[in-house]
Length: 191
Image (tube, rainbow, N blue to C red):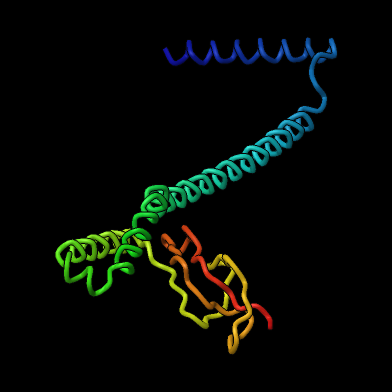
């Protein structure tokens, strides 16, 4: 049986050789197969390099999108209550005004009511603190800071240095370091 297989191999080899010589005589056989392979290899390598470059750019873009999404989530968590906090600033102001208006006579006549207002204000400010909402309350004589204060008026004041706070009309507030509302102040003008 092995003998028959060898015979078939010989016949196939002779047949292939005959076809090659016929193709060679007809001018069909390519004289430079190595050059074609080198060109194909060069093309394949260039294509590979281009695909590698595109892959690296896609990976970098994906990483940038991931980082941006993480930053957006952190910002959303830190500043989610901004609108509500701005709406509640008026409540804080009104509670402060109510307590400032209460003199000794009002405290004697309506002590429990005044105490209730104080407790309400304290609880509201405590809730603000939990959500990183902090008051910006400049003291009289502090330097005016346009990033944190809003000048409501300027007036020359004897003994006050120009550009310093002479009156605080309303405290400002920040949320996680970002300004919610500037402190509303009066500023000393140059005399």
